[in-house]
Length: 387
Image (tube, rainbow, N blue to C red; front, top):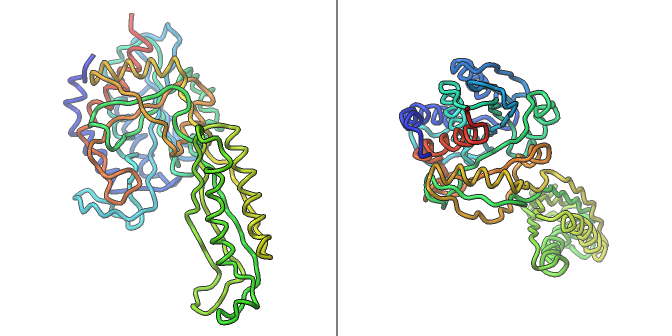
């Protein structure tokens, strides 16, 4: 079934919601304005139940079909939070808050799921229950885990769950998906290097932590090139280099490195953690310094269930006429926590020739709205067919 006429009719209004969210970005769990608007709209749509405060600021809406005899319950999830970035688009609906912007399209995800919720509440052309999930803190705060820890799946009886993310470079309104491992495990690394500080004119009287830390940054790249099977995926990125002094003539006593590790395989994850500690500590020791490694396992690998991926792809083909094979993505996604609790699938929807997500010039393409909303509706109506 193609894009629903009702959703095409609603698209301009949904785009207005999206642009309002874009102008007023909120970070992590501090989505009080966004969550409040979402909850009120769900009530206005006539949802049978609206619950706030799941996973701190998450919102859940329950929509029962014309009948519920099938006993089936399908969850649909969108994320609401923005990023700590300054927008440079210059658009009329650009962020009104310096240092915060919707640079990943969560404004679009939230608006599309609201549009689908309105359609489903109006038509109720399914046999079962649709649960719409609006999640905070996807961008590093593990809001998906927080909602699951609040017994999201058990409380609402969710049996399978689906998510969607826009994707620059994919034609607008087209879809892509893959079964199995899809988005990477995303871990956080902090390395504290301690040496002996002193005057920059007398480096021989110091243990130069800037030099030591620089060697550690370079040496860590040997993990991917020399420790991990080259047919496996791993990314080790040191993204921050901090010293305790800003003076030009001081060799600092301490340096802190921060970064991230991305993997698709549990064994590679274990190996990378072990090697990272050994390489950092050993390199520091060679210079007479010490390195203390803190390794935090953050988001797990996001794994699409085989059967549910087939359902999601078929729904996409009915909406847009095609669904391509998506590549593995080394970015992290906390929908992984929901897929650890229930079978389901995560799909990409095209955002066209836009800046990449997490870029200050990014903006969600509103012309994707009818296809995105229709995909949500298609999943519900085909997984819980009326009659």
